[in-house]
Length: 91
Figure 1: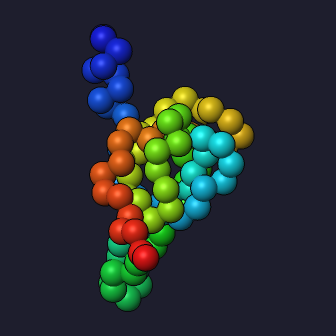
Figure 2 (figure 1 turned 135 degrees about the vertical axis):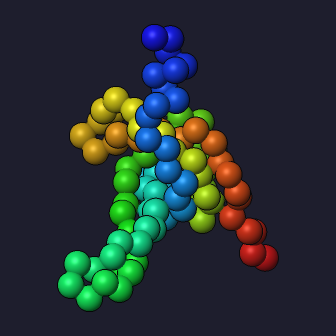
Figure 3 (figure 1 turned 180 degrees about the vertical axis):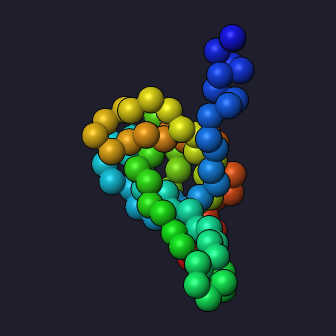
């Protein structure tokens, strides 16, 4: 199997950058909905993941596409594929 075919099978997520935590590191939050087991109402949930940003191109508030990868550090298991939408500049 070629390398590109393997990478295409990895999990990709679109989320929002919530903080820059050092060189080449960001935190990305993504929201999802899950049905409550008893009341059957959809409940909003969110997950924060630590992401490797090789080029330091993502800023706080940007929407980014991230992809699952091998462990890069104690917490980082994702890397930035592309910045989907830049955050609006105020001022």
